[in-house]
Image 1: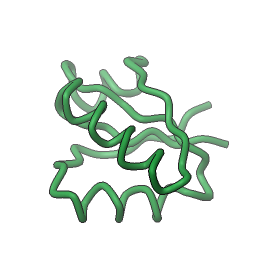
Image 2: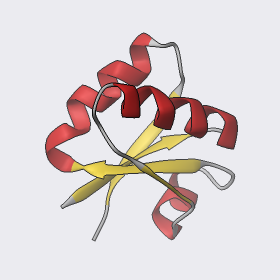
Image 3: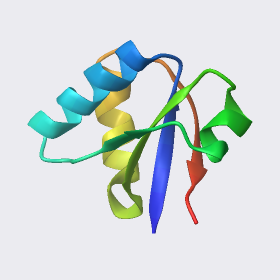
Length: 73
C-alpha cells in the first residue's frame, strides 16, 4: 500500500522528492484526485506506507510545509 504526502506547490514537491532520494526513499510526484480532495492546487509525493513516517520526518526537518497525507487505493 502507498501513502501520498500532500505539499502546497510543485517547487516543494520537487525539493522534497530530491531530499528523499538522497536518503534512499523514492517518491513519485502526483496530482491525483486524493491530493485534490486535501488541497485543490496541491501536489503529492507517493511513497510506500512503511516509509511514510521516515519520509515525513525528513521533509519536516528541511522546513518544507506538509499540508496533509492520504492513503492510496
